[in-house]
Length: 229
Image (cartoon, rainbow, N blue to C red; front, top):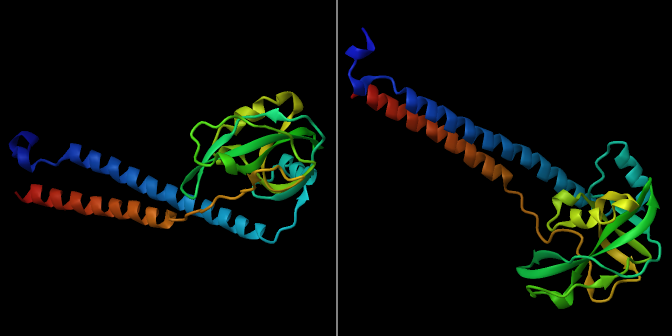
């Protein structure tokens, strides 16, 4: 029997089938992506848990491991900074506990594993909390700092642009989120770790996979009705 002899409403719905397959693939892809994000988030939370008791390691030692290919993000390090005059660097916008906050940065000139500097995130400037357009601050790096290394891409704000200003000093490809500094910069509260890290990726993954299965049932029901009508 030719297609012409088959009633139009009984023909196999090729367009609907293709659209359903595309949507099913997208939903499954989103579910797989959330599963991968779940593994990443669990590893991140494990690293943060270890930070509670991990001793600070010399920055040079840790950066040498990074050059060898190791991921050293979320590692506690200590560094000594050469004395330098205060510099005005961009404040970094953020939100903490529901308020607008501004984080101060400073460049630490040091010799570590072939690098000549590392950008310090000193913490939240308390007096600027809630201000939409604060005036810039001129700050010098402390003589000693202990903190947590983080990759710029994992942080808010355009810290990478600040690092680029010191390209001649061969800055390290990490940001040091300061936990303690000597001397401590006045009016700044160290805040190296996020205030809250949620982990709902399993819930999101189950939602996407559930929508994919629901789509299959809806497609099967529509196909059954069409072929029986």
